[in-house]
Length: 63
Figure 1 (cartoon, rainbow, N blue to C red):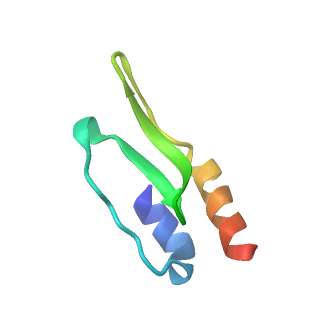
Figure 2: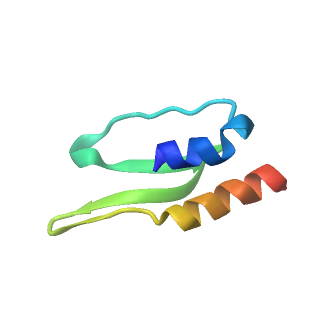
């Protein structure tokens, strides 16, 4: 997911930081605002949708 985002809009990203967490959990934040999250539930892993993530990134870049 990170690779896709960077390959599509990397020239518009000044800093990209990946901070490991337990059970592979991660959040995607832009300027401190939570955009997407990977949720680790007892019986499932819910990953953010790449299309939704790219839409949020594109809104930030264009606006």
